[in-house]
Length: 111
Image (cartoon, rainbow, N blue to C red; front, side):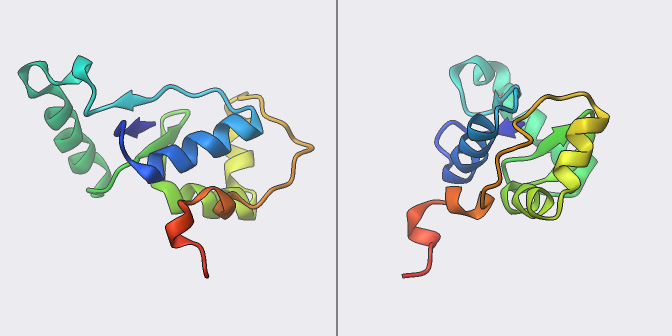
């Protein structure tokens, strides 16, 4: 997952993955580690060139681009994410059934 430390949509994906027991690596492009020599911005530009997407997060499973936050949530809802995880031998809690959209920031939820 390519993410930003202070992005609520990135947090939403992290919470889903944590709840489902999905191991992941987050490359936080705005972290101190990626500030030197503008590495974070360069990686983000390379991502955009590869995926044609400018938004963050950008999630890959086994090298396959899944998309951003809502793309991952859609894939979780219709089972595509689980197929990708299985194909790439990524373990997760198969018995847990949840609404991925419940992890979105509260300000997005219907009132």
